[in-house]
Amino acid sequence: MRNFFVLFIFLFSLDGVVGRNVTSPVELPEQIKKFGNSKITLICPPLPVLPHKVESVAYYKDEKSSVIDPVLHKRFIELRKVISDEQNFLAIQNVNLIKSDGNSRRIIAECTLRHLLQFSKTDAFTGSDDIRGGGAVRLMSVTPVMTYLLLRDGAWIDQEEDVEIKAWISRLVDRLIWLENKYKYDNNIEDWTGASFALSAVALNRPQLLEKAISIAQKKSKMVNNDGFLPLELDRGQMAIDYSLSALQALSIIISVADANGIELLKPPADDGLLRMMRRMIQVIEIPERFLAYTENSSSIKKEHFDRQNMGWLQIYYKKMQDNRALKIICDRKPLQSWRTGGDWFVMFGDPSLCALS
Image (cartoon, rainbow, N blue to C red):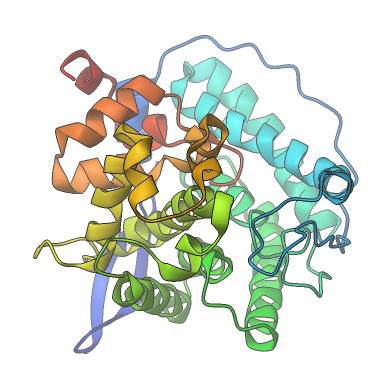
């Protein structure tokens, strides 16, 4: 079997162009050794018809995008349901692929591949012309690209299928670049675009995409204020914690791909912006009331704002920093399952033995 996630590319470092032989973030054979060998039964659902263009609905009632209009939000959920359901299916199967035994893994891979091919056959959401969540940028492109990488590097995709899926990913990236040029945002929309660029750099062997992703993460690290927050996310009223966690989730994809490629975006000194933000958010997750020192909106610390699907970044942070506070949260909150970012990050990046020690 070929090497997993091996990619020969030229990476841009801070000093210029350096040739490297690098790997992708998920060490598939290692994670299979840690979590694999379960017999998992899968009933493969019918292939959905995915939209080429997703209608966008602006469901916030205020300029800060902090107060949700329930009627418009329901409409938004209905419009994206076929995509979110399909991506949730892919995310679950990505985890099952790692956790299953050999025979189950083959069956899961065959089913997941058929569903992934549907994204390319329908040219899913590459016609989107709006920056919002109903379009192509936020939440929509990370999971299928992650699925592609797992299937490709497990040798479950033949050459013809590989060409077809990569052609769709390339069209998707072109649309992301078009949207990024047309709509300039400095908030988490940009972070999710960067996450897609990072994974697509591995999928397409396009180092310039990784360079773009890294520049976004470095930009956000500089934007983190002295208190450990991204100001544009902190300014989201009752949604401030949601969007702060979401930004870290997206940025952690960039961090993990960069780290696999020899570029550290999480490193001492402690005043590094992304590290400072992660440590602050750990404090807030531990004791939500701590956040009230930075906001006048007491609704921001309600339980529903601490969604564990936005806590996968803790696994990336712990792997790098060995902070036991993060490990305790991981073990208390797992699974860190997210349809937005390809599956359960505890299974994709973690080690089950660690939770026995936490």
